[in-house]
Image (cartoon, rainbow, N blue to C red; front, side, top):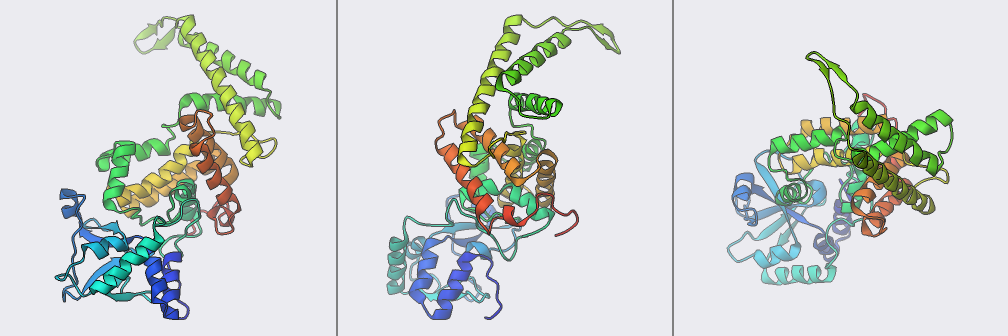
Length: 409
């Protein structure tokens, strides 16, 4: 069909193979990608590891969708991803005679399911394995069904670090992710989210940047103030000394008498050993930050004289993703996700001045939390995502201004 825009590269490949009459090539694309099977949400809640076939009313077809063709999420129907080999092994003579792939679209196909066909499916899967799903470390976009410009797209792009790292569409607001059961498992294991209330609580915390360490942000705020006061680079020892002075002064102020409606409140001074322990800890942290920034400059994460303004971007980026994850797990609605994504974009714009500044803050926080100055996988994957997002012509960071135009879509 001339003029048809495929939602993603998956459907574009399927359409191209179909147009050429290249059915082995069509099967190759299916073997490399998840096929999503519609299920009753209540059924999956009762048996999360079980997937059932629900044929069309005439029992002639079993319908599956590729990732870019999934319908908008609704509260009652969910989708589970399965491989072409899984379908080949699960099929028996009582099942429908056709597997309907993306029916109603120009990339559709109705595949017969004879024993010879099922054997071919397994062979294509064997040839494709272990490559399955969207490639990690690359930019993947929805060209239909996902915003590409405007404030919502900007907010979605704030979460693009994780989209690139995990191999997902960066602009999928109507999010299915890796299927309902896996999305719920992710939120449970990584975030202890079990219901709508806990999802809302975590999302609010991320949007407020309450989950990054306040100690990290304190150290960086001291340097921001010094840089503003002296209009230039801040010497490492000057930074350490200023942080120590601020901590000691804060401890002294906390011990001063406070006038309250109940009268004068006296606070016991904190033990000096406790305060000096905090000072030593922050000074060690400043050394860690300086060493990370040195590596960032060498690897192109920061310009030659650059430094990280804030680590709140880690929470902003995760908030953008969390808003979507809630839709995939059916803990939140599409409208709630959009509000969360817009709030994440606004928070990031209020803190940073460019995609590059935001990214450096995101990566530093991720490294401070996970990497322990090993410069291992946690650092390598974040660096790779940064370089991809700042250089790939298809990246949203190359196509959406940092100061997105308010009121556009």
